[in-house]
Each structure stands twice: as C-alpha cells, then as structure tokens.
Length: 267
Ligand SMILES: Nc1ncnc2c1ncn2[C@@H]1O[C@H](COP(=O)(O)OP(=O)(O)O)[C@@H](O)[C@H]1O
Ligand SMILES: [Mg+2]
Image 1 (spheres, helix red, strand yellow):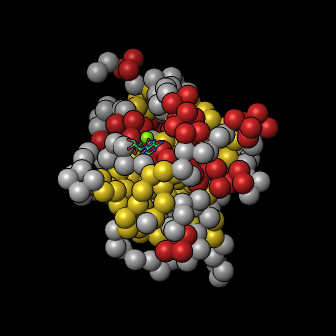
Image 2 (cartoon, rainbow, N blue to C red):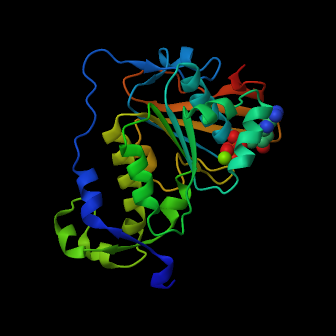
Image 3 (cartoon, helix red, strand yellow):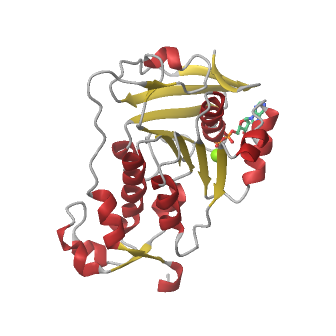
C-alpha cells in the first residue's frame, strides 16, 4: 500500500487524548436506559452513565438496530445524540429504523440528533470524529462501526514525540501499516469518548461463527461493557449476551431476542 492510502495523523494531538484522565465513577452509579425491551432489567436498570459499550456480532445480528434504539431512547428523554458511521448508506439506516417505528426525522430537524457520515479515506477523519465527540454537546454517542478504523493503517507523523508512549513501541510504530499503528485509532476514539463523558455504543463486525468479542481483539478491553449479538440460522434464532458490564451484576446467559416493531426485544 502506498503512503497516499494512509491517513496522516499528528501524534501530539492524539497523545493529549490518551493522557486525559479516565472516568471516575465513585459511589452511586447513574444508569442510562438502553431502549431495548427486557435488557435494562438484566443490567440493574441500564448501562452505567459515561461508559463505552461495545456491541459486537456478525452481519445482520442487529448491531445497528440496537444502536438506533439506544439513541431513540435518548431522544425520548430529551438528550442530545450523535450517530457516526463510516457506512455510506445513512439513508438505509434511517429507513430501516423508520420501518421499526423509530422515526428520527423530527429529531434531526430539531437538531437533537446528528447523523454523521465519515469518509474513512479523508485525511482528517479522526480529527473530525474526535472533535465532534469532544464538543461535549452529546449525552449519547454511537460509532457504527469501529471495524474500518481498526483495519485502516495510518501514517503517523511527528514520530519523535511518540517516544514516551507506553502503549506502543516506537520501533513498531515506525513500521508503516504495522498492527500497533492501526490499533492506535481505537485508543484515540475510545479516549475521546471517555474524555467527553458521554454514554456511548461502538459496534464491531464479527465474522459469522466467531467466538471473539471484537474484530480487532482490543476494543473489548478499551470498552467498559460488551454486548454480543449472535445468529443461529439453523434454529432461526437470535441471541443477545452481556459479556461484561462495569459496576454491574449480570447474567452471562445468552438471551433469546426478536427484531420487530420498536427494534430488538428480549423474549
Ligand atoms: N423491519 C424488520 N422486521 C424484522 N426484522 C428486521 C427488520 N429490519 C431488519 N430486520 C433484521 O435485522 C437485520 C439487520 O439488522 P442490523 O442492525 O442492520 O444488523 P447489523 O448487525 O449488520 O448492524 C436484518 O438482516 C433483518 O434480519
Ligand atoms: Mg450495521
């Protein structure tokens, strides 16, 4: 791959995010309703506020629908929401949601939700993303999906300043297109979400039948919570499993789910 295909990224900008303080949840955990019927009851009333939830699963497992429900619930509660996607088919997302009785048009017109399509090939895609998150305007943020970010190598400029980064060895960093360089994106975005203190959902595309929690093998560690959606074509069944959730007692048992009006519900 030529350097032209890489996105240039100024490491000093990113480091300011990585060095930002982590979230502090002291004492009482404030919970945010997911909008998924039956799910909040399984997780002590909702997702802990200001945390990142990874939603992973194979294509068609309901990741986008679940994220739409999460934001639709936010709108219902008068919160400000952001849906960021690297998928060009924003209209398709809106149409699918409307079919499931989630009409985002009035909220878009009121400016209560923003659907932002980001072109992965654009030079400033990461800055655009992190700046939007860090505007601090949003209560709920969705990034659907993080997979193209983790797979797209970046060309890191300003290497000298990166010597004190503990998460990557600078020699590896220099190896253009190397794995750690690619995964740096995930740290940048996750740190921006942490810093902004919004409650967020990030999706990861899993190959069908995979037992992994994310495509990149890292997002599950950077997230506070992990929800896995799965498909069982033979039995014509769908499942949802809460694999991890910060400050929450929950079952690990896969729950039967259905997709219908209102989106996903636990049955
Ligand atoms: N109106 C609907 N009624 C029932 N099921 C639907 C409807 N719309 C979409 N689905 C189901 O949801 C799937 C798409 O869900 P989606 O959240 O977009 O998946 P992904 O995990 O790929 O993001 C479709 O493949 C279909 O099985
Ligand atoms: Mg999707």
